[in-house]
Structure formats: structure tokens, C-alpha cells
Length: 57
Image (cartoon, rainbow, N blue to C red; front, top):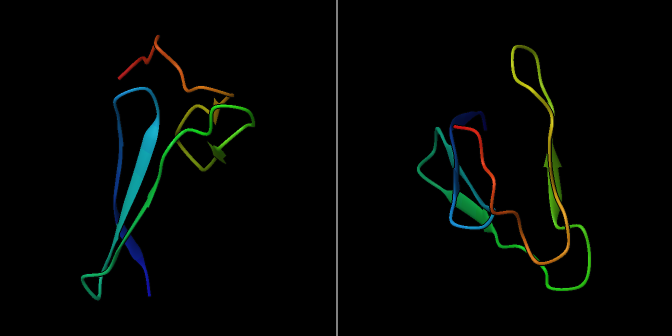
């Protein structure tokens, strides 16, 4: 299974789409760091408690 789509919306909801049609979504947690994203060719993203409001798309 290969991730074919990555999207960040709202205050930090991460959605991943995969080549088999399945999807995974992770919403910000009010109390804890929810997720981080790193990879080649992108700036690292860390969503802190409660989400983020200053996304740079």
C-alpha cells in the first residue's frame, strides 16, 4: 500500500489517501501533540495540542 494523497485541513486534520482507495484521517487532540509529518522535499510539520491556526500552504 502506497500513500498517494496527503492533505492538511482546518486546524490540523491530516488525511492520507492510499493506492487501494483506503483513507486515514487524524484530527488534532486537545491535550497532546497529534501527529508530525516529515519527508524529502517538504518542511516538517508538527501539530501541537489543540491544532494549529497558522498553516503555510
